[in-house]
Length: 469
Image (cartoon, rainbow, N blue to C red; front, side, top):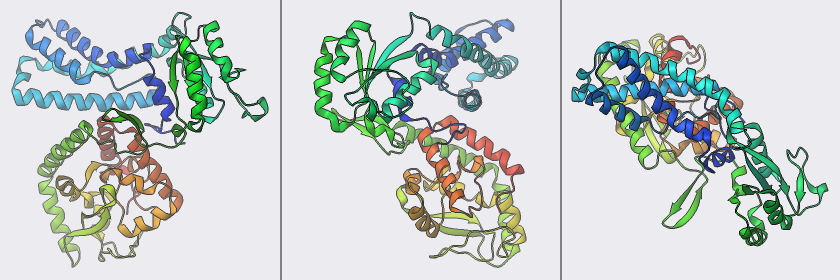
């Protein structure tokens, strides 16, 4: 399993965070919006500003826009820093656009706004760091620590126990396991003792005042589960069922419903409902701004391509888009040949087909700029898995497990794989497998702040990276 900036978190971890409004959850939800509001008020007071209706409205809007906070205490400090910077940048853009569009920004002195923008992420970082030290001690105190048992000594039950054991913010102590099998059938490395058989569970729970029971039994054992639930009706413990489908690698795995019928998503796009609207809106707004700002540069690049060698200015290539449907992707032509057939040869270092001007625009990624038109057309997104030629797709979909899942979203001009070193030629199956793993990781962990982080990181990489040719 990869461990990256926005690493793949097992669904059991997400499930644990949904099983109760824990102390760390409360702090995670309120800390970011509260810090923003308090920093604004403190800065305004420092500059002797009258805290009147304009500040009250701005505080209310700021809290509403940022609640609940996206950062949690379950992540590494590096992940938190990335999320904080990207979220704060996004917040500034949204509030700044609102302020200028409504002329509301004129109610606030520039020095107050500048001090607010600079001080907030610093103050948040300090408070967050202190809480990371204090919270585990508070959560693990006898009055706050919950007790739990797990029914089922299997892979998912052991994984569940290890999550509680390794994450102090979950505030739960596993007392033991219950299972009907003989000890010789249990796997090694069980993180808690075996306390008895399933029929012993009810009495144990009552005698030991257990707070929570996790049923990590295979779905094939449904009759046993129903019988066990009947025996537990005489207890006050909370009961959670952990289906064994969660041991597989889910993409946007979550609980949902069809009418009144509960269902579990196994493989789904992150861009459903409101998320889809947010993603599309950000794509359109940013693409229009970028195309307007870069229009002079685009004109110069078009002239350079035309003068570099005979052929069209724009190279159109068939690629797979959303749901595996073919789309036409635009690029400034950088080669003397335009392959788009059954066999497409990837560009390599010192490739004779690449023109001198083409080498320059490929190295700087300026050959990709026409794809912002693809974004406006709705064929692509600014951030997403990079589209591959149809011929390459047909090769890799047979060689790499889960390859086609990356097409659950629109392809992007840049992506999570590209900012993690997998930009340019993929001359081996191993490299392509790593690129696909990053693409799937993006699908599992998408957020608007992650998109902004990828865009910012792409801009930095393009300046110094030379992997594309």
